[in-house]
Image 1 (cartoon, helix red, strand yellow):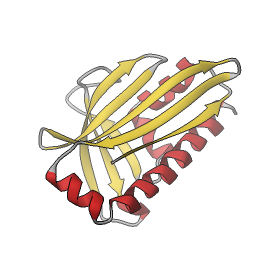
Image 2 (cartoon, one colour):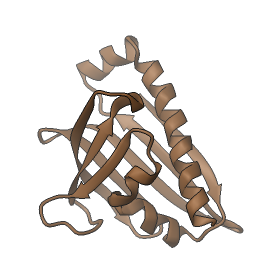
Image 3 (cartoon, helix red, strand yellow):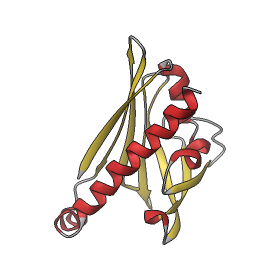
Image 4 (cartoon, rainbow, N blue to C red):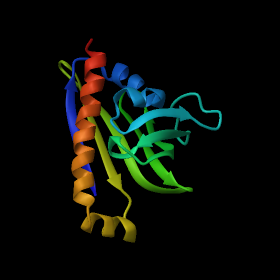
Length: 150
């Protein structure tokens, strides 16, 4: 399962990247993840850095923490991370920042790693989750846009 949403923003790529890649800002924009913090001595984005996000699934619950690992960290160009169960990645989130004549096209995307679980999930309710993620990605990006264009 995967999806992507792109929103154009009247701000330079580096400015948007700095806001997105500091995971402590996640709670300002995400409908489900209401806070996040760096782990293991990490103080900012770098490949392999870990952080955890505090999630309120579907904005109502259950509430739980997820551990994540940065998988893409190219200032002004891309930022990505994988959500872990133990040390196994199960879901991947990625942001790409493309310069335009008026600012930046920001694309947020996700994909779930292939497994028996994700195949079954896709058959039984996965499309509802995909639709929710698309709506939430748009909401997240529109919130980021409001801040960087203010």
